[in-house]
Image 1: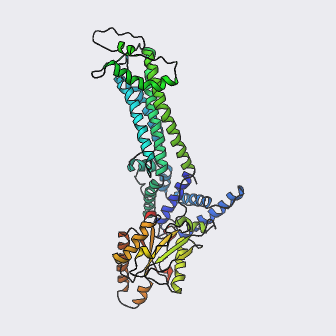
Image 2: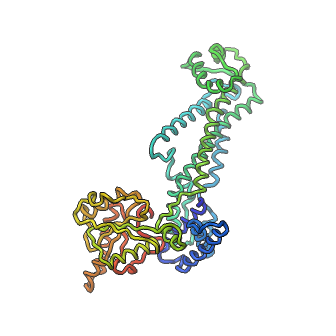
Image 3: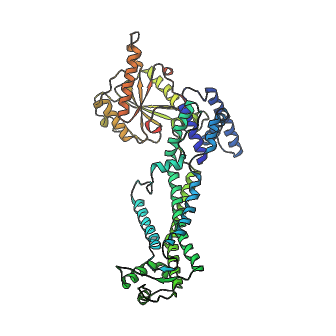
Length: 495
């Protein structure tokens, strides 16, 4: 899906996940949107003579929901019209750079061409240094590209952080979560666009200086020369020979220079300096800047622009998220989700095994399957017990550690088990806390609910400390803790 569709889909997911109480989207609203999206996706597939895809369904469903929310909440409609990011920035920066470049060489004497012009040498030297830095960064493994502040990237991705007024609480929370999530998801695209714009601005800045140099030469007689406190004619000749070597090599028709030429052009008190030869140095500097600055920057801008267009056309949205898995099940698209469960000191009987399948269906869709691994005995070394487990199996949607709420969390046992899972799983690890044993054991006792709540709080704090998030379930009665569409199993990195 493209960037615009992905943005709407992520926005709907954030709103549905935040609206757990169905304050802004009732269950009927969600079912109607899914039903309408299935029909529209089927018509779209029939027109193209292809199968119904998950992407088409998500696109139609998000449009249905956002349209309904905009009709009900004018403030939300205003938020949608406002758009995201800073669209004017991408065009304004190169234009401002062009103007700034045209004004740069006004610092020097407008009636002479300085062979050691500080502004022109700065433009060339700075860009050569930038090329070297980009080359070094490209050779460093794992680098995302040129450094850029997270605040700037967020502003370019989502724009102003101000929220519209008069929004329902759940809708405001959903938009806030969406803006935070979209800033992360769109970072590669924003980086590519920023790189393209910066390269264009650098090319425009250099081009502005060259155009200004030629424009003033149309109305002004340039005097060419140089002066330096520390450099003599030989050193200046060597410097300029290296500087202009690429241009003189590629364009032999340009007039070169000798050491005697450089010596004769030195400004000195009381000397009569001829205006002849100014045109030669304008051409040399202009051609050098075009060759070493403008052309490479335009090439880099084209590469960054190609990356940006590719990302915008095929936005990298992870459709293996449990939220998308559940929606895909409703149209029979995609492969069934798989919940891999790793019990710790917990043996499931037949009733709890059935309950686990029900939990998987609630969290990942009706077609979800459960892959139950052997129980890790209490006190056993986790690394040895999990030695043959492929932690990042492509066929597994979610990996979950299963604990009994009746157990007291221990750092050296339960904590060590979680640490191993978190360390080896790149997708994150969910935690299922089954309360059925604790509630059965304390049935009829006074204060049971308070003890259960206290134990849940203890476990959640413990899991958070070990880099995971916990979901409370009851494997004997799974409907006691229903998992809402969009909420799924708690995964820290998907929040």
